[in-house]
Structures are given as structure tokens and as C-alpha cells.
Amino acid sequence: MSDELSLREALFSTRAMRRLKPDPVSRADLEFIVEAATMAASGGNRQEWAFVVVTDPAQRAQLGAIYGDAGNEIIRDGVLANPDVDDATRRVYQNAMHLVEHMGGAPAIIVPVMTRPAPSSAAQAASYWGSIFPAVQNLLLAARSRGLGATLTTIHKFREAQVREALGLPETAETIAMIPVGHPLGKWGRPRRAPASESMHWDRWGG
Ligand SMILES: Cc1cc2nc3c(=O)[nH]c(=O)nc-3n(C[C@H](O)[C@H](O)[C@H](O)COP(=O)(O)O)c2cc1C
Image 1: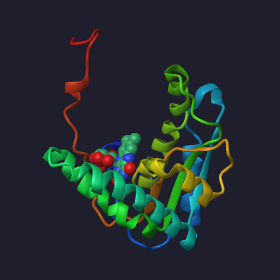
Image 2 (image 1 turned 30 degrees about the vertical axis):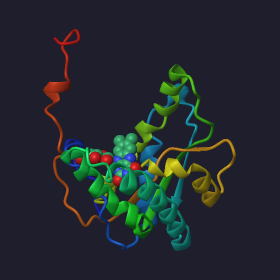
Image 3 (image 1 turned 120 degrees about the vertical axis):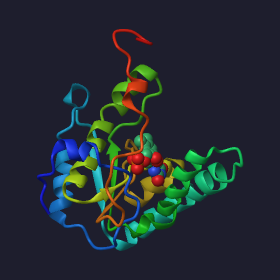
């Protein structure tokens, strides 16, 4: 697979790719994806990150079961059981149910981790979370550049203790996301977004 995809094409066609083939992802691709993640900025260039790449079938099945359990509680029995949820939101969460049922079937699951606990103050939290999500976005785009699909997911956080135990993380580590990676079954295309002009302000709010 080439990694020559233009940056513009990657930016304008990378969507949550939840439907994945079971075929394995090469170790070289996984190493490239993580290396690309580590090119991201972090506060003070502290690089307090780690990336647990899970390909072992038993480990994937365990993460899939934990994720499925969280997803059934939060999405199936929470969001989707609420009759007041609007149609657009319902569609997103119906799509999300695919991973609730199939996370463990992804050939690789990457769990980015911060190596110290999350702070509670908003000012410190800005730098903490802001020091990992650029790496996560790099990771998603790097996967895209290799023709691999991925999805940023976070509902595993409702089962943080179980994920930590499954991965043998140290006490100080905080999981950030659970990212299934694999060859896509779905199609790439421009993400469904409101026009940028609706969120853009010139010189001052409302300008
Ligand atoms: C912070 C964050 C958390 C997310 N958590 C989940 C999740 O737990 N499960 C899931 O299936 N998708 C999750 N997503 C994916 C979003 O639902 C998805 O990106 C959004 O609906 C837009 O879809 P698109 O990128 O395909 O256009 C998450 C995205 C972000 C940015």
C-alpha cells in the first residue's frame, strides 16, 4: 500500500471506518501508524504517551467484550433507548453499535495511553488531553494513508479499570481511546459536516 495519498485527500475523506475486514494488518503498517502518531506535538514536548497495539486474538476478544459491555450500557440501553433522541444522532449511534458488537473482530486495536493520570483542573486538563489527541489524529490519518480504516472511540472509558487490567497497564496510566484498525469494508468520502462558514468568526465573535 502506498502512503503517497495527498494530505488534502486524507483530510477530506477520513471518516469513522467501523466496518473492517478481519484480514491482518502488517506489522510494518502498525509501526508506521504509531511512528506517525509520535510525530505530533505535546506540551513541553514531554511525549507522555504510549500506544498499546493489540493483535493477539485472545486480547482482542477481551477488549471487544469489555467495549461491547460498555457500549450496550451507554449506547444501546442509554442513547438509543431514549425516544427523544433526534434522527441524526440516532443514525450515528446506530452505526456505532456495529463496533459495540464487533470491536474484537478488528485485526488490530490500538489503545493510546497517557503515562500519568488526568488532572482535574481545566487549565491543566487542556494541556493534558491536548498532548495526546494530536497524536491520535496523526494516527488516524496515517492509517488512512495506508488505506486502513480506523475509528476513534472512547466509551471503553466507562470500563477503564477492566481495560487497564486486560492490558496490564501501570497504576499511573490513563487510557485515552480504543482504536480498531483494519482494511475497510466501507467507502471513504467527505465527512458529513456543517459548512465551515457556520463555525468561523472573523476578527470577533459573530464577525
Ligand atoms: C472524542 C470522540 C469520541 C468518540 N467515541 C466513539 C465511540 O465511543 N464509539 C464510536 O463508535 N465512535 C466514536 N467516535 C466517532 C464519532 O462518532 C464519529 O467520528 C462522528 O460520528 C463523525 O463520523 P465521521 O467521522 O464518520 O463523519 C468518537 C469520536 C470522537 C472525536
